[in-house]
Image (tube, rainbow, N blue to C red; front, side, top):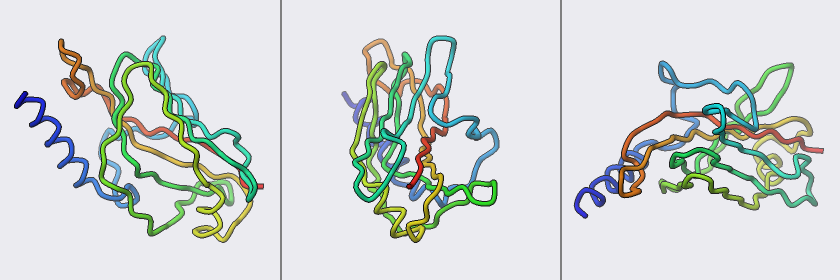
Length: 167
């Protein structure tokens, strides 16, 4: 029991120290985004992040979906980076959003969906510009121990992203 409490406390402390994702420098070996939507972990294991529907307007209701189709525990937080595609390159959208330092997770095979108002973000932080956007989220995978407790062994860190278009 003490081991579980220590691991949970350590995770909360480390996660709280992470702060806002926009302030995080990329570390050596930090994965780049190679494609939005789906990242293959192995032949039959993958992570998916998507926004449905991918067209966003002032009237639309959009859902962000995070799907863990691996045999590992997926750890993530509320924090995200937002980018706008302009002049053939992705540009960071600065914002003053504060994210709660709460660790979230999905067990193997779980999916999480969350209804989100992307249009309000674009309107407030990017002057409502129409065009292509993406949301980027850093996640980590952990293997469980023989008792099923997550955070037993670190597997890897990834950056997932989902694109959407403001019309």
